[in-house]
Length: 120
Image (cartoon, rainbow, N blue to C red; front, side, top):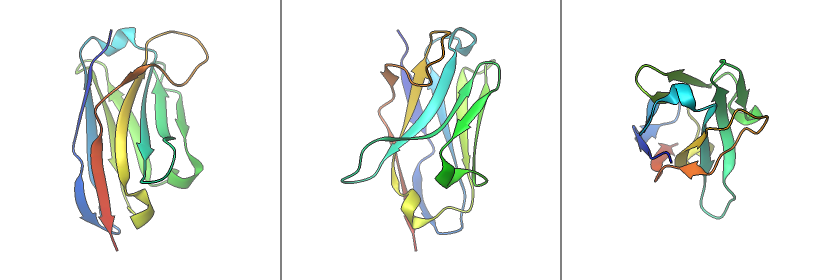
């Protein structure tokens, strides 16, 4: 079992920055993939970025070059540095964990979500 708690969301103007954090309830050394997903009103949840324990990353095309995922296994935390934010980045952002060491990028453990709103 893994509990995930996100923080860092808020309201920001277009072009601004935010950092999201997600703390896991157990050591992330034992979790293969940590990721961030988002869901905007009326849309499906989508991958934003994910990172494997070995550092391999996977980004949505729409965020490459603006958003950066990282993890600190000593703090059981995954981060999402969000720069050059756009109104279309507005969504609830969810942390995800996939403990198994296989080829999948998404797991069954989700945080409660944190709202990010970007004003134009």
